[in-house]
Length: 480
Ligand code: NAP
Image (cartoon, rainbow, N blue to C red; front, side):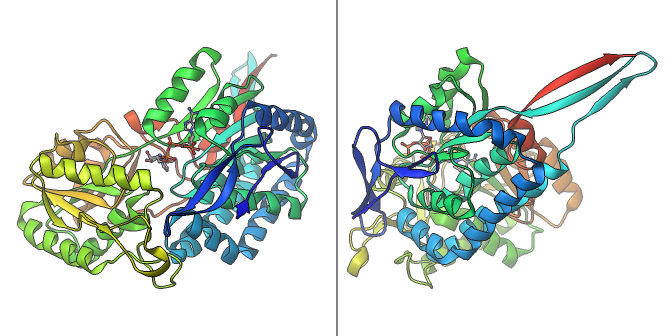
């Protein structure tokens, strides 16, 4: 049994409660570890450590701080196999995906912000003949970072790296469902000699330790990624304290597929956008709008690919589709498929739980599922399912495609598939999502603003946006 510990003040330690939560391997359905069921008492210890570490960390020359981040990145790269294996066991994702996407990106996050902090400049505004203003951008102090289970180390470090780069001390909580790589990050911090208390990692449930992090008075900002309902609860909780809050929330992302698209490439990429990581990426396409002249052909091509993609043991090198993250999540996704049938939907491919033989017999596997014949108002077209389930609808005009895509409370990401660039520009301008990809998906430049509109969140991550979030600006006006 793998029992993990909190990482506080540079040391691993058991939770004050001495209570633990089971950690289940999604591919087998078996308990394989225990994680601390931390409480406010552990947050208190972490805050004490962070307070002690803060003055030296803030005063450290930028280059030295950047050196620590680069060293962490290097150590993540050195341990890529171990981390990829841990991520695959913990999350159920194919090990190849963890090796190619999740872990390299975690290293890139640290490398990127090691550079970004040295390029982060503040503004000066001259009032001709009267005065000069300059803006100081100072670290906030102690900040909280709370992340979800779908891209565990990738998203955990996407918050931690800029927070540290900006000169803050961090108290971070990964999802209780996927704690393992976050634990290993503590070892990496020890190895590179990151000063004790600069990064503290607490495990446990959102309701206990997550909320305690959010509510602690010494923690001045919260960067949260997770579901919209949780984000709303945190926003409500924090409103009276006026803490800085960044919310990266759910999505219901449209893909607009036009008849003039590069057909074969679009089928491949849209399929990947729909089912990568078992459809459990906030950016995955889940509502596919297909121009009528190619609707039947495109639909058939997707069905053929879905039928050919069989879930398998994620630890196999050749696995392209692993397990869903938990039994409760699997049940939720299946309940949406049943709901779709009740609402008149036509299940064109998949729709069933898969039972594998051998060690994965009890795993949480689901066929890639394609549904059509649902109106845009149907639950499966309006609510986030966050699994390997997509819906298809035909459209006839650009205006209709845009109206269907914008008919949503969410606003995270859109993909547009067309050779007509003028159309792509016009739709990109009018679509209500924070991210638009044209003829691509998940092509990421870490300098760009990342985040959603409406129910998909508040604020932006990435590049200088993240550096701005993790600093407080102060204007100084000097009269001549
Ligand atoms: P979640 O249930 O909202 O949980 C996210 C994190 O918040 C977890 O660490 C969770 O702890 C913690 N938490 C729960 N309740 C809390 C509370 N009251 N106070 C403080 N922390 C609390 O989301 P999830 O199921 O892990 O992740 C899936 C969701 O994340 C999807 O909606 C997906 O779209 C979204 N997501 C968004 C983005 C983006 O960039 N926009 C990226 C990835 C995922 P527990 O472990 O106990 O639940």
